[in-house]
Length: 253
Image (cartoon, rainbow, N blue to C red; front, side, top):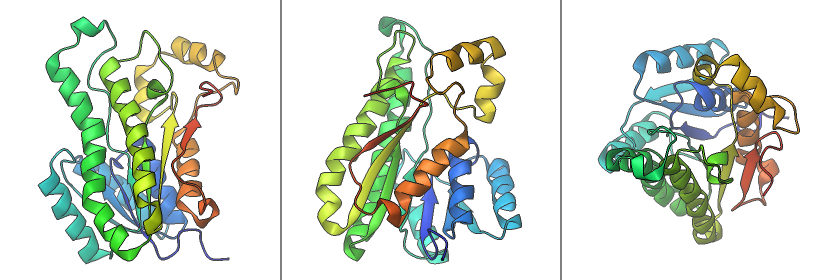
């Protein structure tokens, strides 16, 4: 059997570390030609070198995904180097405010969270979906969060609102582009032990988080990557418009 993504071109935004890097590595192992994206050139280069050591075909690109002109230039660069984009994983994002009362959230923090997550996802899809529609094929995977699935007083509200918006964007888009042979799905991870989270979440807090999950551990970037690989593959050929909670049972909707 050929690898699950053999011959396909995949763009994974925000793939210099964490979840995005794990998805890029697994997609390359599954035969995809992968475009890594990010603004940390050194981190991207390290991920690229790791993939190339495993025999993968990969390039790295840079763009501010809150600026449409930069995304368009990135798309053209990928098409020139690898060909049309078959798979988009719109992973770039993050939380740009601390948890706290809504009235203490700055306007700048609100806008940064909306732009860095929801707007970035919208603009990236806006650039890439026309080519998919023209070819009548494509797969788009967006990345939300458990924060957009389950209300909690300690959630950073701008981040949660942006991630909930990504979920609705995904489902409405799926209804528009399904007739063109394009599938659109969303992954909503719960607490994932990325390199950054391992450093900033104290061990005692990690254990407390473990205790609220029916599956008694926290998630890893590879847990999310394996869900993304399934959704990108032909095994999910009749699946679209869904939100997959990669959450160890910590979110049940």
